[in-house]
Image 1: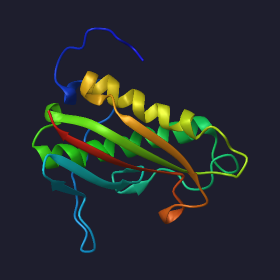
Image 2 (image 1 turned 60 degrees about the vertical axis):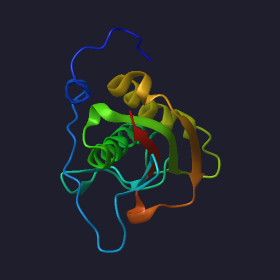
Image 3 (image 1 turned 120 degrees about the horizontal axis):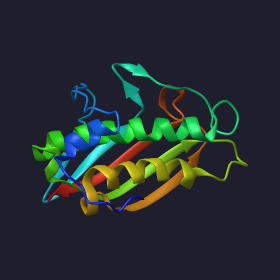
Image 4 (image 1 turned 180 degrees about the vertical axis):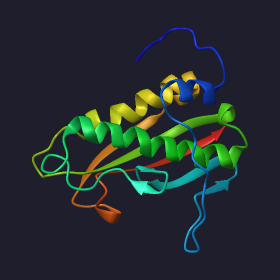
Length: 157
């Protein structure tokens, strides 16, 4: 992780990395985030961009580790969009915990390497507010055959 001086807003830093926050849509069955006391619980997010799921398959069989890392970065950007929606501004988001689910073969042992890409992005965009507790979990499958899903807990800074 780079520890250089950060300038500009979190949105500007995100843009410099080639990402923009997507619009947060709705679903009739669940909400994208729920606030309880000072904690914001962000629903699991898949690596969608402009309404398109960017990858499908099992990491270690159909999807290479580097591709899964890119998918994790997109999924965490989608989490940031929901978090910013909840607290009002990306600059106010402080990540508490992140759970990274990686659909992977039983012998794939690099779930944490996939998760590192999302963790690094959070730190690059949010600085110390992006540091978080984390769990990376290998699973047999995810919704829509996505290789990665990320869920997080955050608060307003």
